[in-house]
Amino acid sequence: MSGRGGVIDNRWDGFVPPECHRNSSILRLSKGLTWEEAEEPLHRDIDVDRTCGVGPGMAFANLVLAKDPSLGVIGLVPCAVGGTNISEWRRGSVLYNQLINRANTALQDGGIIRALLWYQGESDTVIHSDAKLYKRRLERFFDDLRSDLMSPTLPIIQVALASGTGPYIEIIRKAQLETNLQNVKCVDAKGLPLEPDELHLTTLAQVELGKMLADAFLQNVPVPVRSNAPKRFNNFFLDLLRPPFW
Image (cartoon, rainbow, N blue to C red; front, side):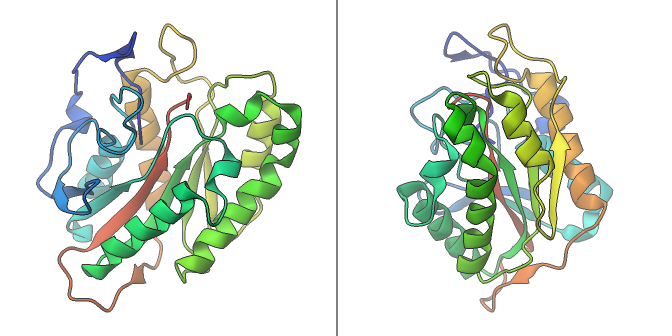
């Protein structure tokens, strides 16, 4: 969800396609843990060390609501941070603890966890040992997250890489496509258009990825993980789709 669509030479062009426009029924959890109407860039106060542009999150949320208005209001919980590999998301790490804290904050307001959206792995393509260990580390991360959120069947939709920063892209892609856990789906970003740097997805590619994620979610709308707190709105998604370079 950090998104680098429209970012050239560390500047975002400001173009927001129609599929990503604001919608009063789509909220985001800010860095300060307050709810506000979502708009691009979704990660502007989360991934602060790099320039954020368009990601797949708004396209995903808009399409989900268009196809299933009964979901009501959607809350996006952006958590992505650039430049990180899978080992930096291990249980007990700063990033992992921040994720858990943000998820639990959303639940306090009566939120319902509908899915985890996960796009990561380009940094793990650089070193062969990292690539070889990726599948084990990824599945451990998913297991730990489900355990700590007390949601053993939390739906997870992950993205198979479109690009990478090193030579071991296919090892990571194979691990992602062959993840063998219940309620884990994978959509394949390979072949989506890239920015001139041949690394980051273009704005239109981010929109297409959002549609792919929405379709994967809607094919089998999961039973939600509910909070007992009074409801402010109906659904939220943990936004961990991440741009192709961290």
